[in-house]
Image 1 (cartoon, helix red, strand yellow):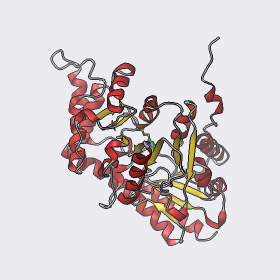
Image 2 (cartoon, rainbow, N blue to C red):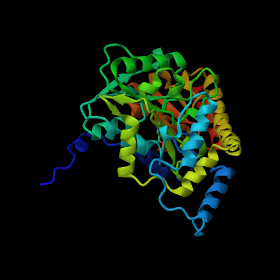
Image 3 (tube, rainbow, N blue to C red):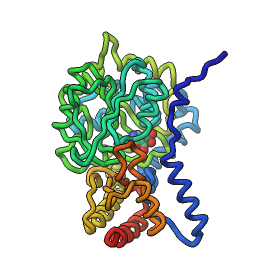
Length: 396
Ligand code: PLP
């Protein structure tokens, strides 16, 4: 008899976003005259930039004529996109060869698929609060998960200690949900720890484009020693509005080896077996992101989200609420006032001021008592939400 993967039975229901959707739906059914100010979503609200749209149209036209039609592309990514990404890293002083860049259909897909490279006996270290997919993907594989809680005392940026027993280390910087960003010294501590232990860091850089302070690294490969212990997973979802278009890339250095096996070569073997790559049209759209015109246009969109962050931060500053994030990240992580629990605070904001955010408890036990605001919303909704927040928080 066929035996399904029993680890699926151990997964907790993904109650976070389902719970939010259920509560907001019920609220609107009972109050049809009200409108909601949604600061909870992690999806973008601005469209693709003109340079990308033009490239997508041109690539669709290529597929319409015999001379320019493209069939299968190399599984690991079209050379034009792998080169464009490598050049983008070079501008930051990180030297990569294009065949260290793997084109993917997004960070989520990749964060799950990459686990094929590691034995199930490896333990995964996940610092919490965390993007829920890390734990779930490892639980599905039956891997042991070591949770490293973080908090206000370390700015939600925990550092390694020698008693940590982990083989696969998840680092997300800028972080979802806390918006906290590791500086060079902190990342160096993780890189040194991983090299000492023979562990591997999976560095999720999905929000690197939001970093504005020069002292903060965008890539783990800005840190000496990372080429022997890290894989970097990136996404164009938040950088360039590709949440629905789907495109990302992963960097695996050629030096990365464990037990005499080369992880770059293993990933080539994996990709050439398990995928026929990302569509030509989408990869052309992605390449346009890395042109001068594309970079200027995505910076404009990011500026809109950063302005939303400023509006929300100003509101929280006015009422003296503690928060982190917002400056180098599209998320603001605030402490709920008066010791209120994060779901109770969610209910309060929904019922009293019609503002929807995300309860911190949904990102791990240590997120209890905190609340996440996304800055990807509509600017006028964000202004109104901020006005309501200041007024409400000022009187509770
Ligand atoms: N990593 C983090 C930390 C995220 O927050 C998200 C999406 O919200 C992803 C990865 C997934 O990105 P993608 O849209 O490329 O799958």
